[in-house]
Length: 429
Image 1 (cartoon, rainbow, N blue to C red):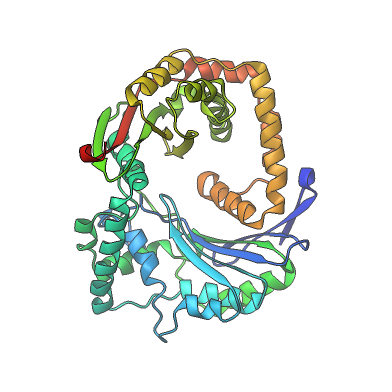
Image 2 (cartoon, rainbow, N blue to C red):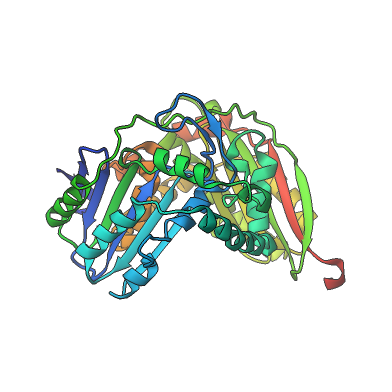
């Protein structure tokens, strides 16, 4: 087991890669009572075209199958629901599917060793039948319809669909009602056997626990199981152009005020040869500075009553592009969008803005170690996006400088934009 010092936070990161390829990241914190453990597969909604394990032919599976598989993992052959198991010790459990990963988790102060073994066991054993798959379709259909009725999810899914032309980021994470009814037991087994191999998964543990005892338990657990060796899963690569699919779309919902998502599609390769991490940091600084709650823009739009709430700033990254989405509410959409367009035509960040942003990043990164959930989520995000968690990640923010930022601003093309507007029904006005 490797022990790495995170100097700036005075913390230790423990890392190990087991013989079967499973990676384990641990950061203990004896100042808290809880333990937060996650078990993640590098498999999300975008991975719908791939070469299955023990095959050399690329296949396509129905949209939403990763989310469907997450549901099925909670059905065990012994009839015990994992939620019930964890709740007996006062432990909270959950799972979620994202674009690039699926994560299973628990958090609580009791029975940690028993819980970590159970987490590994239930995720590493698939039990499905044709009947259970058919039954699940109706359950997921109701879930999807609930999301479809939600204005936020309408905007979230709608803007991605209108921004991306080829990349599967454009599709809803849960799929569609039509696509989930195409899913078969054999499809689920292929996805599970390919992506739920330990060599494609990792464990992250943060909170109050002993890393040595924990790692020994995980090793013993894994040594009792047999998994076929595998190489990195081959995923289809997509050629995504810079243009958006549709630059404007509006729908009506039973709401009281206009809700919108304003998406900006950015080609990352045009930003120069700096690292992907730095590109993302600079992009965050630029848009948080220009549109964040402390920005001059937000103050002006509030004074004009163009904004009814602070702007949310969502960031999604694919291998080739970034999607930056401004999310908010307004009674004056045309006027507000004109103001956003005008600001984007004259991007400017002062050195004082950069230095303030670096201080904020530094503060956030240090405080993160006091929150075992935020810390765990950050490790997961880094492993998914960059392949590992770098204990020197805080130092990177200190390396940001005005010369690089100016180059990014000069090369930043924000001309490819789309708007998704959710309006109240006319009779609501």
